[in-house]
Length: 417
Image 1 (cartoon, rainbow, N blue to C red):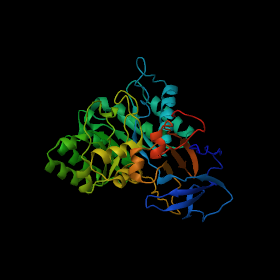
Image 2 (cartoon, helix red, strand yellow):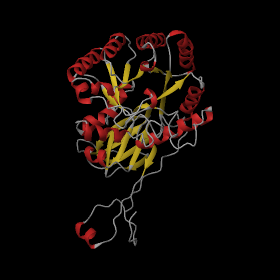
Image 3 (cartoon, helix red, strand yellow):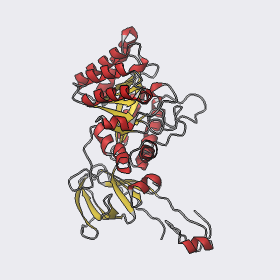
Image 4 (cartoon, rainbow, N blue to C red):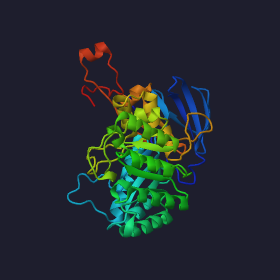
């Protein structure tokens, strides 16, 4: 039989919270095969395969591993998909909105049902890019949850006065998070102080770009950030990996004590630091110190990484393949830990939890991180994206004798798909 996946059902916004869905025959990471009933945007019941009945739409997940959906904690949607532009990328609001929307949908197809996008404000663009990103957020409602981070360039001195005013304006417009890059300001400590002050005024989380190469500066940031109740995230912190191990360990302990999350980018650079070739944060050292370490994608085919994929499962794969995490830990970095860093509710495949789910063809998490082709994405209790892959081998004697695995076969076809 061909590898067929159901089309996403069509619901209007008013119906999405009450629509119900039965996921049949899914495999969980503990090896159980279950049915999962969804309704009102949540998981209503989980039972052994065949045990749940409902007068509702059904999705056959036989052969799929069902997981809590990943979240993308560090995107740059306003600059995404610009690597192949002839000349400077368009900065008109409609151009930015189109890129932001397309990038969010690409990442939704990978499984990310929540996305935090860093948007530059100030300079010649003013608030145009933020306005476009907020419009994209509204248009994507019901498909994926997009939140925006306002990223001013300068916040200190005479030059920073405009940036500070624009930051407050961006939050009034609807930006959800205060961001920025203290490394690029002449007064990094003053920059952090200004960000934390504005965040405290508005009750917003903070998400800062920093290479983290200066341990004293990171320690000061941790000391200042410890009292902010809305949460502080820093990243990509590749500079921590270039420090002597003892210095990095002390810095990690300071971050843990202040409950500061670290966001690493195992897939490569992002444009926030305006530099190339930064290393990945020392994930195991940070985790050993008690730091919450989430993983993001960073650049999605822009000048910082022209081949960036924006795929959370690739980020998890790299954490497992290159940074010593096991498959469960690596996937948690892009799912449960990433959701926690974003302030989102916890997701488990259990009754009562939000119906934010990803089904990937496979039976074990390690195999899914290795070859994650076919995917079905559930957001707020309904299928919102699907990716279908069919693998075929030519009909040779060797293929028949070895009974090579196939995901689909077209009767009478002698080639490969």
